[in-house]
Image (cartoon, rainbow, N blue to C red; front, side):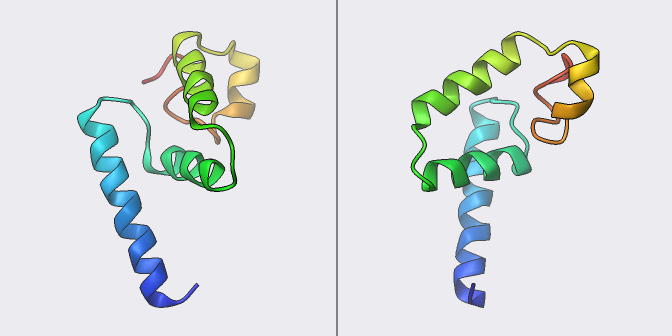
Length: 80
């Protein structure tokens, strides 16, 4: 990726993160970046939103928590 494209991507992520904070989504930059990438790859944004909401509403039991924490560090294990 050329430097200008990388800078644009960083600025876009920063703007999306700022909007996410205003909307109090509880998403961190990394998770938001993963979700944006998944949308760019063609996944349905509404379906992704439903998955995130479900993860936020029903914390994962502790044994599974350790395996998922790197994907959704603030959304699992009852930590928001």
